[in-house]
Image 1 (cartoon, helix red, strand yellow):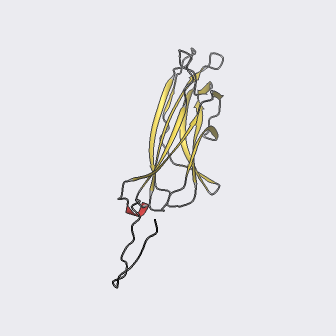
Image 2: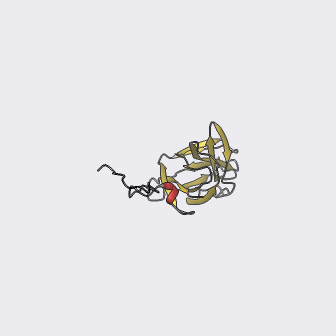
Image 3: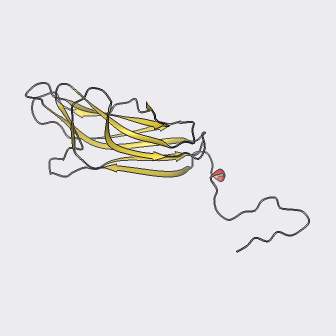
Length: 174
């Protein structure tokens, strides 16, 4: 339906009935993006330099907005020839314009230090990022091990069920 403008006083504001981003109060969720990954992977690296495959990207509508990053992933550690076991540790990193930086400094971890099969665990972590950009941002999960054993990302549980890792990004109005 076309909008008709008439009268001698002019127009102060034309409203379409749609809620615009600028109309949302501080703290409002503006957009939500989810990424998933469901492939079991063995790893044995002691630095946070290996991507798990779990990623999601978001483009903030304003540089003053924040991004709430929420990650849930499963894993375990296993012994290496009867030596000290390993633990799985995860860290979230962000990539903006080809430059990578770590954002979630806390490294939730699970594993064991014996020689038997590793403990299965699920890690959940949240981080509120202030990226100060309107460029596309990719958030990804990195992992590493401790000890001489091998970590398992998305290890099957004792019933043989394959878990799925998720990363959820929420743009929050600043």
